[in-house]
Amino acid sequence: MKNKKTYINEIIKRLSAIYPNAHISLNYSNLFELLIATILSAQCTDKKVNEVTSALFKKYKSFNDFYNVSQEELQQDIKQTGFFRNKAKSIKAISRIIISEYNGEIPTEFDKLVKLPGIGRKTANVVLGNFLGKAEGIVVDTHMIRLSHLLNLTKEKNPEKIESDLSKLIDQSQYIHFSDLIIAHGRNICIARKPKCSDCVLNDICPSAKLK
Ligand code: SF4
Image: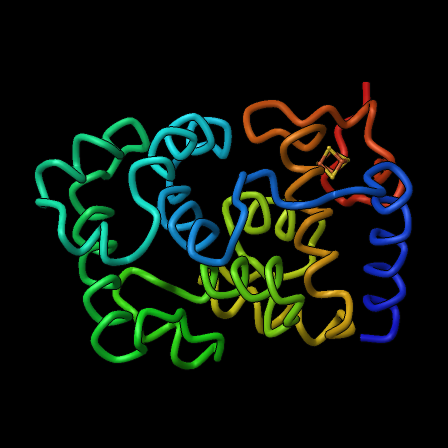
């Protein structure tokens, strides 16, 4: 375990050097917008979500606006992000609960957030980590799953178990930073369809490196 911690610290050190400003790429200006954008980002690129939300947030400025619109109209407004029926259903249900149970304010406790419909650990970690700097957990998205396997940080497949394995290796103060670094590296170098191992700063320590 000690060696694995040294290994992961080296990964963090090297990735921090090339992504000094690694940060979530969703556009938002408040907690409400971040929560909605994060829900829309499931199975969708942040770029597409930003295109959709630039118009969406002009039309919807509060949970009341989402609560009062018809399901069909909301579906049309978010259609381009994919899985729009489920996403619209979740946003409507969340809006109803936040209005009725939380007086229109988003709960900022992890346990309450994950009880909202359509909000899993990933969304809660993104929202709390990025907006409030609350390092409750590690964001396990598609990049984190792929890279943690390639880098041999876990053998687990289930996101919760992956998060549990990673959290034993990383200081809690690094949870947000580590998530941002891995996502940046997954987007830029360790790309799913063809990792650019020759250009990767981890290629001498990564067990999956394929060098010509
Ligand atoms: S060496 Fe290749 S497989 Fe390993 S992290 Fe870098 S790009 Fe990904």
